[in-house]
Image: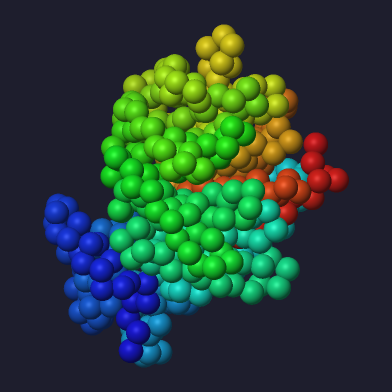
Length: 406
């Protein structure tokens, strides 16, 4: 019987050790299937607190849809668990997003990845048009042919637990080894993996610069890094707490979002010196950012439910409330044709939002399998958007009907 398809023994030991160091989780409610839920879910895959934080569902069918993306269970067990979860963890109406109508038409297509429970995330487009993703909990990367739906997964070192990936011009897939402190390169043609050991313990998000170097953030270590793929030389510097998202501007400046302080950082790619811009309100936290053609820096203010814009030339900052309010928790962000696309990760379903800076208007859509969180997005060469849903193990593509875009 396959209870939790994501873990190798090594990953299981790493995760359960980390769980043991956390505060005690809340007790599950009493019920006929409590022991079954504990054995199947909370003792092996995630803590009970995950269920208490969930938005819940009002039918066993909806709960089963979620479970089927995580584990394979006998029908009787799946039904019993679904009924228990429906009774004790119903929908929370306050988590529903405020969806805003508009004239733009999009199409969202999603694919469930092969290995269940891997927490698929951070999809990218390779030079050949294929879509790649990282399965962080299963320590793998996967390749999807969007034309045929064919998928293939490539195992990485079990202790790597890659956080994000980025392709190079030759089609190699570079990953951040978030649990073993490495930057890794996978050659898809041969399966060969080359690792570069970092000083930081948790490389997070990486991006290639036009100068050919790879720049990356390390969140918990509070460091920024630069790797020369040709020589293997690594440069790492300390920075403000919890550097997160990273982008490169047309002038070569490397922009960094900070999730541990209310700042944005402009990094000199040669010296690695950082100029900081302070965002209003000390509780502001920024996960992702993007750049528009006029040189503006756009960001999500996750803790305050807003999106914002920084003018680097003047330092001026302006913010807008997201449609679902202060608890909407905007997370990922991309700029397409100078329109801002992001998600409200605090809502269920997860909402995809478009903001037009010229008219200062919003439009939003519910993600079909929106029980997870879009943590990162990628703009394809034809101007569409790659998304994912970690909790339901899906990657997706948002096709924007350009003839209807304002």
